[in-house]
Image (cartoon, rainbow, N blue to C red; front, top):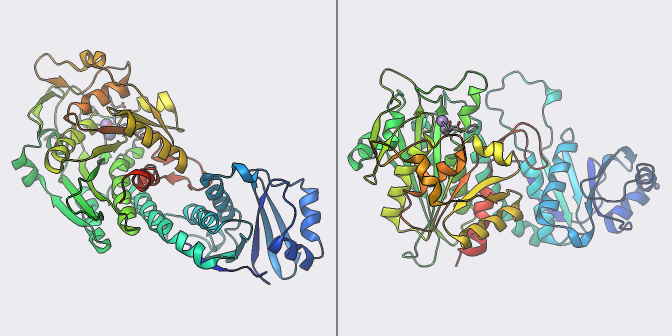
Length: 489
Ligand code: BES
Ligand code: MN
Ligand code: ZN
């Protein structure tokens, strides 16, 4: 992670200086000092650029004098309208605009210490890069930004506000790393061993293999896995942070298909490489557990991930097969490409039966149909519980990981009626995301539950303020916020 430091306000004499400016604000503090030190160069440049501090607006001034390499002005908009996401986006804009600087100082003397920390978080989030597999990158293509110093009148307070945010950022980075990994590297066993490393953060981690899951009767999950030489795993991660050890846990479940070819109902070749990120639901659950542990959240939480690879082979599941899920319900597998719901069916039933959760939230890149419905702006939210749905929606708004509620209704059940089993795994094209949710609901046994269909949100084809192109880690910050706002002692 980008090295973030907090220091007492003092004008730097080298490197880049960032001014975060509210709309129509007059020069003050460090801004005013910098303007005087540069003989008014900053004021002149901002005037010519017609920069007034509007939200999302930036202005770079090169070599303004006083030893500074650049001054970057970042607009926050009207002071009364500044939200957490405004500050994070400003931080992201800084990391992006000043990637070629080595040291950057941010004049945050007009911000509260907590706000200064949020700017730092945004910069850290945008500064992420997955470069494990690059061996020949030219120096001029790399980011040089190494240290970002936030200048504030209360460095100690800003630093302690940043501590928990750093824990969350590390969770986000873990998710992005997992989702970015190529599928030849990140098969289920490898993903499970990355989970095991989380014991360093104080999580208790259990791993179940095909033998254990077979004994339990995970016929739905194992049916998906049977076509692959890479064995299935289920990982259970426990975080005990509540004062009362007996406090019921909050439970998160993730779809972890490390590669989804579609199986015998094989997908077309074009774009199939995207299906390496069909484990993004599981990736988000893992990053969330790391975030909760990293900031020592006062909650009991359990994360479960079902990890499989969906491959066609001589041993693969066929369209028409009937499998028996861990719940005892039987499923006719009409389409082997509707595999995520089969994985979730067994893991959700196990979670609700074994852990008596306060609620369960599952995340899954479940349907292409949710992308048709909501595009890449909102995740789909399905829930049997209005208060949980509302809390999730609010947490999504606060963190910029937005959710839109979708319907559940028994009337959709006729679409997944099977002629020979308790249900079939596809319900046709109409309401494809809804029939998938109806299917999953049969494995939650009336517990408060929400299903987040994140197929449109897990991967981004372009840079956003705090999210570089690629794996987004969508869900980690939203769910961390849900826990922080409602479920901690
Ligand atoms: N992993 C896919 C869904 C998906 C599609 C995620 C595009 C991200 C981008 C899922 O397993 C799948 O294949 N769903 C099918 C379901 C259909 C067969 C009922 C789909 O959406 O086409
Ligand atoms: Mn599929
Ligand atoms: Zn899938």
